[in-house]
Image (cartoon, rainbow, N blue to C red; front, side):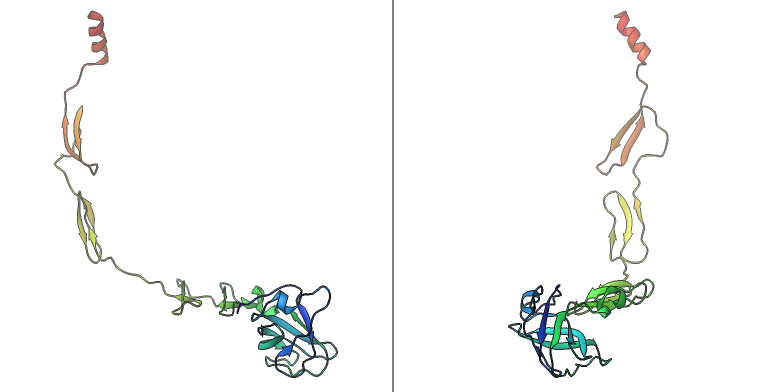
Length: 221
């Protein structure tokens, strides 16, 4: 069974009382519930008496042949309550509608509310949460809920190659391990760099021949 809403689905019934109504066919320009909604499916409905001030809006379920509509949940009616109307004899129109109470504007009542699909695949409201709360699924994974965010602590920080420090709880510090290179200014430097990009040896070299000297030597030769 699935919940379906469709356009221009309308039939009539002559069923009286407060039980399921037998659907009696449609008129030109409309679809039957069998075509528009489908066997065993649910939908929003309106039943309106053609000659009496009797009407009902709710959620209904079709049987296996879409011949009968069971009035599962009454949302509003001509009696001003949410119980099944006891319809009098006569012809009533039965059609698919979209109840005002199920529109987003009516479902959401407060800034920050969240709209989600209920178990019946109808709009439902989750009232806004408190400051710093986050959305999560409930224990049954059927609906969202607001929860306090979970926080934790590290279990281990291990210093890798070229690093020192680390720890398994609280605040930890990781340092770059010192090398044998002395902090200084080097000229004409000879360097050795390891796989972690650290300079492991450094030394100053002697100056090479200047460009002018090299050119003069070339001319003399």
